[in-house]
Length: 255
Length: 271
Image (cartoon, rainbow over all chains, first blue to last red):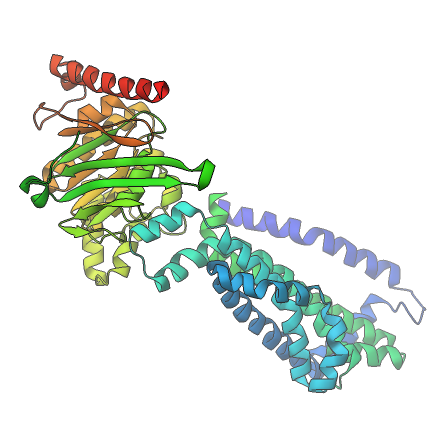
């Protein structure tokens, strides 16, 4: 019962300001005759017509797939390489200069090259997303692994914990909070790069759709696309938070 | 104190001989252990005391295979210790850091057994037995950070017991709990020694504790450390926090160890 009340209260705080803003937007824009600022009611109508589910499969799903492929491969490579580099001094020292150089390159700057090499298909977009999302995950993982308490390492040594057990049950959980910092940072980078890659070279995708709508003066459609992008970013973040709560429950409750 | 290599050493469960260790290089080189020798028989309760800065922790790390000594060796059941031996379990002073906060109490206790290839049903039985031995059977599902300091150290002891070692090595295990809890834990380890027959080696800076727990007290000198004396404690097996500590014999042993440590410290200052 008290738990229910607490959940309701959290939801109320979470949604009260957005609701107020939506109501204000709705009211202010209701009688708008401006081509550039259509009434919110019209935007939402278009949103429903477009995304539920006329262009859902043709534009939204490809974007989502590119995002998933790019981001998830960055997660796997970032955590895997990060753990290896965090645990192995020579590897860290050997790879670090390259990492520092590459991560200083804005991923957007790689778009022309990526189009040159990979064309404008999904592999280019997923590749650019991968490249941009990799660094925050990699660097945070290395940092998290390196900051493991030396006493914990002594404990695992004295109890002859195997390497596999140590990585799975000690290194990853210990670095977990820091890894999630990287995952969150990378997620926003991934969404930005998804759009950037669809704006410069694409024949499908939400970013492409928004740009097309703007060029064809379908301003309401453009707004509807932006609403979808906002929702996408919000929901992805929420999803990551839910995962974090499950994986790092011990860490969150302990605070 | 030099002990000749006699048959006693041969049959000892743990024998430390000629252990030496220095840190640093050149002018900043500092010798911590000079020539440490002692032995522990199976079933012994040995305590190690020394003035602060005597390199107790360094000695313990060299003995347990965590740190390579410059010279000398440690033998456990006759085999030289080069890496942490499977027959030895360590209990650290800082329980809050040595327990893993993302694992429940029972998870922490069974964790080392997974690497040993102990099957799940046996892991569970061993954990239950070990937790019952330290009086924590009802806290198995809790997390370490939900327990008091004394209970956390009990979890660490249970983890060491479940590991099934022949010798349990403890590094100032009760230094960061309150006096009441400390007395309880001291009696707990004495009780465990009686019931389970495990050999204990406990490092402490507390002379009362050293005498109260031990069959023999190993007194260290200040750095560079050697063994000043090994004091036998003839107080019988049964000890009691109030009664034993009031006995004239306890008081005189306590004074004897105290004098040895003070002499060692003054000796060091004179140098």
